Length: 397
Image (cartoon, rainbow, N blue to C red; front, side, top):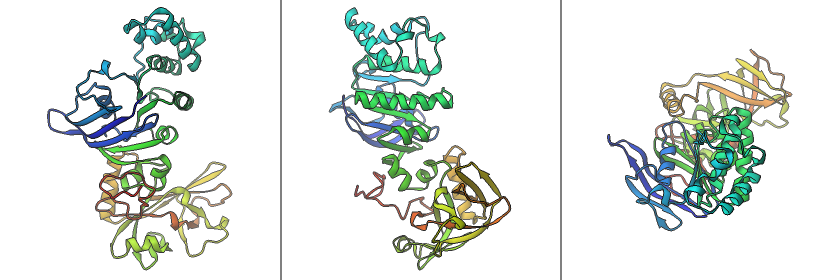
């Protein structure tokens, strides 16, 4: 096993466009690191530079303590699992798993031992004599993983391995990959655009946007302390709500009314004019089921209500000023259109009796509020001691 170190990695193509722009990431020995971001953010390009399938324009790539920029892929001792499985259709499962060992001219006895050990680990024993065409998608992906396991590689690299599977299989394979990585303790770099995979699999997550690293932290830190608007909007489903906000004293003026906010948040926001307040859906509640709401309530019309049994989603439209609307439209483009309309999405207790068209009284937990600079997208209220590494910000983590 080996650590992977990326130092100021840049990848430019013929037109000079930086697909990856000055990215530095340290993947610790035995760590499960996720690269996540929308399409075109550079995550797969970065992975391909690690394995040697893409040339590095500038910067240093180290595996262990060895610089590998000029090494061919076969000399880097890395095992890669692709999105499309890359299995040989004319070979049995046994021979697909054994293929890298055959190339290395390993003796038959050792090949058999390694293949059968990998097969037991991945529960493929009964399929060893079958061809890939007779396997399910999940079984094919396990064969691809088996081929990676037998190599005794320094690290595993996964390039969106579950994107071709249906939702149920993706959930099962996430669990299998997590168990396998923990059992083997091998350094793993995993690329995905699916934030569920990122949040459930990774020890740490690197969020990329347009080739640049936005934040590197644990899943919990990303969720609770997003460094900027992009990370806040990308991590979480439903996404964080963004509202126009001005602060005077310890009062925040929102489209639905005025609420009291903690002094530490107010102190960072006073005198800065129009801000963007960020609140996740679960930070709201039907005031009728909250014992002590204090002065943190507002009233609004519930345009749409979705009751799911254990929880209820209510959608409350609002008007945003032009300068904020433009920022949200830009953010929506960055998020591949997943983002954000000028409506508040609130997650309420399933006991709530709010119906469509009701004038609802909503409680908001303002201690969880984030305040963003609309010009730069910077989170003014982020706790840098908890937020991991945010490029461009002084770090105390």
